Length: 121
Image (cartoon, rainbow, N blue to C red; front, side, top):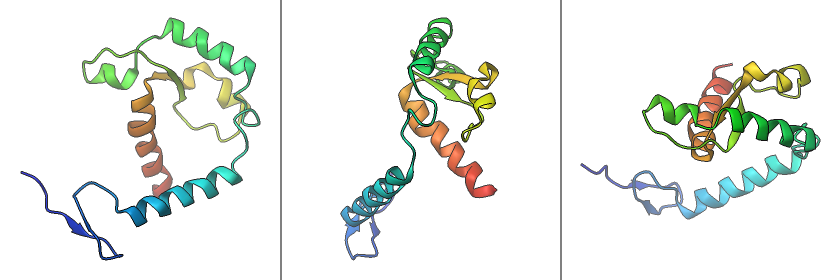
């Protein structure tokens, strides 16, 4: 059973689960403002030393933890910080705070969980 379309604030009728063009544009602009304020990946610690440690970790933990919970075997491509380090170098390098994830899980499941956690604070 499909859910009905909805009416966007701009007046456009939008299929359920999709964003209107005006909402997509606003999201792109919001993300661009966020990225402009955010330090570079290198400044956040994702340098050569991190890339080397990441490859070693993925070699010894090759499967996505989230997919494994669902009984799916998928190769991990991201080393995720379970607790966001927010610039704390000790937490950044603490391997017990790392988990292997595939890109889709990192970009959806994990980000959604972090947004929920951020809103609750």
